Length: 169
Image (cartoon, rainbow, N blue to C red):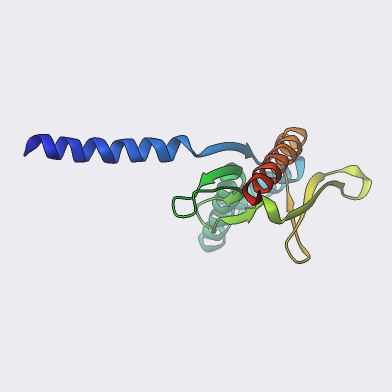
């Protein structure tokens, strides 16, 4: 009896490790720009000012704003995932954008991404990547390593096209 339980657990462990081995990921973090730093410093000074003049409600409101901004800034990740579907026995590539605990993840299939362009704001103060996907949808992201992100995106899109072409044959 114990042998069968052990065999059953071993089978589940093998299934789990096989599934995890089929998942490959690459993570990029969000770039911390000068604008983010300035806004955080300004809001922190407002927190101190409101507590100094004994306006605790406004001080607590700005504390919540600063905590939310820090949460979004520190925990935003852009993850490339290659997941092997158990039902279809095919691998699909996704870009998962996680903007922290207080927001939902956004998943974009790499097949849907049409274009990724580097963009600059007025006077060149900030730069970001503009991703066009789906039916006229756009998304602005700020990865820490823009060049590495674009290289990884093009590499995975080419691999996705090759695997999709081999499946059709």
